[in-house]
Length: 420
Image (cartoon, rainbow, N blue to C red; front, side):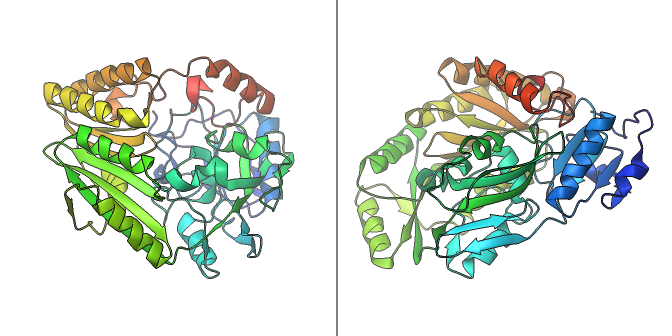
């Protein structure tokens, strides 16, 4: 990690300033702690492509950023000269109401996008972290999603078209504007979750869903993660259609299971009654229950935050094991997980104990086919705690894809899995 810009041999910045507004970088522009020399704000896809042509010609290291809500995710880049800000690319290009699709620029925040779609009674069925700050491009790059994934799938299920600026300055378009169009199927999905290492997203087209007429949440309370997990699996086995199921627990806390139903009022009410008939103790849902994930970042103290995945049937086992580790190592802990088996963990305490707990829990998860990716770690543990964990046999394929798209390695060098 670096506290000041890494100065490269002099680059022809005056050439770059002709393409778009250019300014010296500040501390707030750092990517995983690495401060670039300059920030550029292109106003079109063509301008992004021009910036990348300049970067390739000068072998300048580049990263793209949107609202900056996830700039600490991933490894610090090995080197960084320039950040491409998408702040000027914040428009909804087209909303085809009848086809239930919309095309949007990468700098549009998720909240602004949803507000625009809501004017026509539609939405992007996605609930990523920090929607008021998170931008479409950033959410795509990190493949962020939330509890709505249970019913509507991940971003790879919602994106149907994309325009990207490749490292050589080529603008590539794949997919289309209708849901059934399968042309270019691979490119939108390939760029989703690539952390800006293959190109810069310039536009994206999504399939949409209607806004629900009614929404209700049922919150069940359990004394153990095992009972909560049994309740979740029972729900999933019934002929109910929850849009979201969330488990939340932690040190000195009970285990809560939040179940959200959406649809017409009569249908929602009927499903709420069937859920209550399962006999679980329940209480009034907290107004901010579905924002609990974001609270993991709000607390102070030395901490690690990780995104984990397990089989849905093993959520309780994962919670029990982290509880045992946290107790042994005197750490505070909190888990917010989805019924899909994807969850967030916050561990807080002494740095040495954090390192031990993360290493041991990751090993236990990977042994059973799960994973743990660190989204936050203390500065003093950056050299000891690897962000991504074991990528397995997929790493070689990802390295080949990176070489194919970015052979010069100018985009986010070193930030992704395996130092890609």
